[in-house]
Image (cartoon, rainbow, N blue to C red; front, side, top):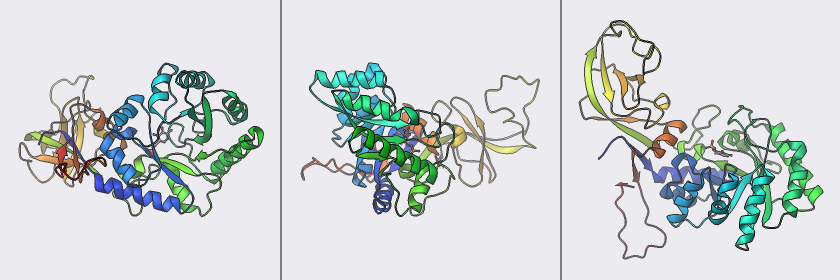
Length: 373
Ligand SMILES: *Cc1c(COP(=O)(O)O)cnc(C)c1O
């Protein structure tokens, strides 16, 4: 099979989604499955839906369009506030969008009115992470303006944590978000359906709660796909951390001296100092590079150590002797590796445990267990 290649085990993704949906469901929290790290890959999105997520969300309109074209009819929200220019596409393909600017919401409302529709809006609130969000003191006024605007409907509010500024989600922040929901409701005289308490970083908080207050939704990507808590980097109990594997092929294996020789230029293409090592060692080069993924985020098999890489080559030291030319090395991705590999045209995508599309009749051929897709 071609390499580099990323393989996904859909059963493990279904399991992770189902497990999180069950555990959060006991606490009154629904799960929105976030597909941006897999570029809206329709079968991976469908695996999240098989696991029971209440809807999907993605950061890019193109990814949403990809899922719609593949026949996914479930609710899909645009996670990153849209540009005013994409309002029409967002209105057409997204059941809702997360917003922070009235100018953009006005563009969405106009797009919806043109087709006699109503677009759902979730307002993002700034709770200290300092990425997107309306300042808390401006929320009630903005919510009022959305409610008065024909063509849009205020569906809820949400906040994001631990993405940019590193602000951790904790009980005080969650209570603050809940209080803002109450304030909007009493000022505007209308119930908010969704109070979305953040991304995978909020999971540890949520699982510790028996009564999570007003928070009734989390938007989860990393936890479902990789089974890890992004704050601690640790495995979430009961989840698979190996749903994805990246394969790269060995193109060179030689004993090489530890240090580069000759006059050294500052324009080293690899990591600074990457080539400096003690004594000669076995080294291999893998046919994968920074244009395919984020080499720094790879976990290598035991006995292999990454020395650094360039746009299309990854240099590794191999403790146990030479790797065979043409052998495939299995690498474990983190979120950044996954996102870039899924986005890279040069990386093949292969799926295990595929299911036929729901609309397929009994006569339809079930796709092979592992196929390039
Ligand atoms: C990416 C993103 C998420 C999902 O984050 P994960 O860490 O993958 O769970 C949720 N909400 C927003 C606003 C995002 O941008």
